[in-house]
Length: 592
Image (cartoon, rainbow, N blue to C red; front, side, top):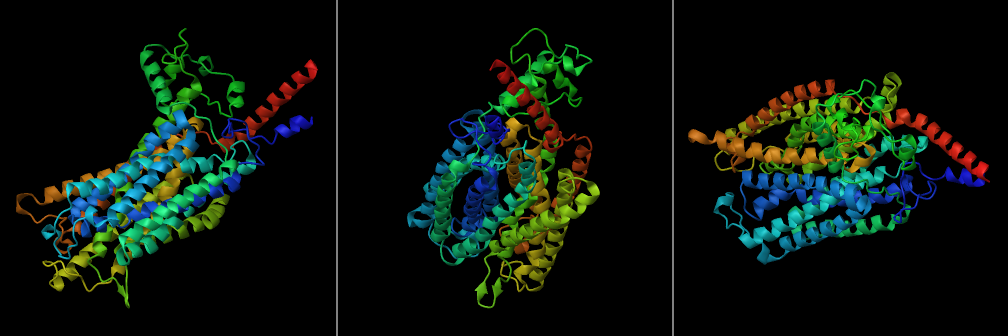
């Protein structure tokens, strides 16, 4: 019996150590393991935002690029940063596992950071300084200089493709869904995960940005590079405490087999009883720490993939669980699409919002505020809102709704979408006021600095952080929570994909609007001289786009069916596993 009691300490979710052996709950995982993961994320955010927050100004001031070109180069790079996690998720789920994919990607990430630091440090890798107001009159960067700089940026992007989708998933993997206490701890994990992310972001948006603007870009990029190296060492030091999941095969292949099998059997009638569909036994799932999913009526056509026709070809016959996993991933796609537009709004905080700040008075006494530092208020606002939400809002609302999260994840995302509409309306009115001041002081033609404090932009930055605390936190948790157990990395990459598509959409809209508004001799909405531009019209266009997107969101969530919560089925599954163990123990006793 002592042996049987000892087995209760093993995790029940299929996690193992690096050698593939089952792990003891008391020795691995939990908040102890997560502390090493969280430390990495703090430093990694310093590195990423230490580059992205001020990148538009480096491209303008050092590489002498115009407003549209510099902004699009930023959003194209950021878009790539957030798209490559799809590849990283695939490698992790299908081949290397999350841990080794992450470690290998860190090497690429650090290489890109080191190359980038060299490109901003060596005089031969950047054009000569130019202090003219119109960058069109400055000497442009050579092909070699651009190749080294952007080569470093995109090497870094490849590295983040393997770290972003796996690091948060590694953290979430440290909690056992079959264990009541650990399941409860996991509910708060994503809120505190975001807290750690934006703690590192705050340092980047304040200290690092100030160093870049006032001390030098070498130190401004060198410090986050060093911090990233230290954080990877800390992560590796925590290896003995981690729980790992064995790669479950390519999620894309698993989904493709279901779709192909359903199409190949499109004429085959579905049985009236779902129990006649092909499925494995509960014991086989339980032995691997997985959940068996019952057949549902949504996306009913895909159920044909599980109809028995005599063939055992995996491209002709799939299990009900595999079909339902595919449904779960497909059902989230309309929600994913609805997050593209708000991600486009977020892209403005590192491009046009920062460019606006360069035209305003940035002095507080003798101290000059770096324009990109205002993004720090996004971070501060988000940090405060996350804590207030987790510690005060959820406990109060939970008493009324009986939902462990207070409100549903989709409701929380909806609040964020509404805030994005408000943000762009405020940004439009603020910009109109700024342009009026420029015209009153005769600064609309020469592009001079306005006698107007930079803090008039503060409301749109603060509200952006508030919106992120609702939308971004809920989005990350939603895509992780609603993804099947074997596709968690792919589910997490949905969140980063929305940011990637949003940034590419920002580049497309900026170029398109700039081009269309300059046709037929018109002055255009977005010019190198922002005092002659009409960003107020551009932001009003974004407000209208956000409103239409919100209507689309309300439509798609009306038809969305939540995946059965693990917490709802956990007690039933635990009891079933206990019965299975008891039967196994009785069989062993009979043999003896």
